[in-house]
Image (cartoon, rainbow over all chains, first blue to last red; front, side, top):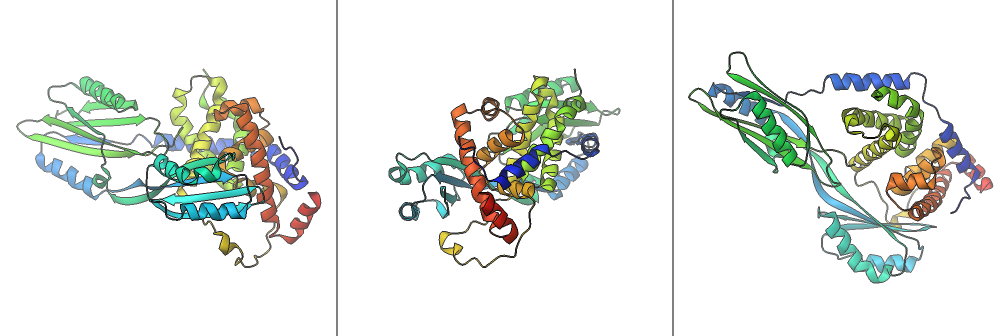
Length: 254
Length: 172
């Protein structure tokens, strides 16, 4: 292992290893966490069973509520090669200039090697990686190179319904008690590979309204995003009603 | 059963160092740590081994940082032919730790994390291997490459700053 680092770097690293937070930083952080937590029990769905007009209002409100969601629009593939050979860089550039689906290629040369960065509008990172590696296989043969991929994402605004991409969870609540609905929702969430951390169903005192709150969490594989749509179907006093709302789930990878 | 606060307090300084080094600045690092703490608070019930709290938090911070870096998509990379056309920059001034932190942010993430865990948090190669789910030889490789890249990035930064550049050149 190369342990020789310039003094300025050694000194900088030493300073960083000695760095201490200020006296109140921990308390401030915890206070902000507690404050956030106390406001995060989001009302997920408010379902009206009887008045159709009210249901229409709910739909309208859902359509008008702005929602920001993230869309994967491409992939980045980066290859690091321990070679500073300019002719190799040129050869690779020539070999990759017309690759299908690869929109741009940049390279950075340092004394330690060459880093190639390819951008593609293809969202399947693995496919892009293999396309590039197939094209450069003969040039990289015998070299100890690193390949990394990442998704290119953009945030988009729109109405909530525009974010639907799949993952529909349908539950018919006819004749079910609150507890039975809770169990059905929890089971459906588990079926989607997520963990329900809170499912709460409460019928109002006059029996005309049910409030459903759902919180769930789970690990989403790197580069993926998931959208969940909940549909609750049931029959009120002579009026069939259906309300729906979906939430986009974009969680960090772990 | 320890509370979240009790678990956090003894390791907090290390988490601050790690976050700041991963993010490239004190301010970004503190924001990163705050994001990670919010996530951790929500997920703490999934933590099976309280003794592994520090490593669990490091992973959450790393993931939060990946999310942040992704949002800075399409960073401005420069083609080879354009490098010669870069005009002379204004001198920049860095203290050593800021210089290293800024340079670390340009090191590829796995190499960067290995260098930070080893050099700043004082973890062993074995511990880093477990944290990165990699072999010890892979970690050694990342450390070696990370150090080399760090040196290059520091060099690139110091060429922009005359005084520090001279000091750096002398120290090499």
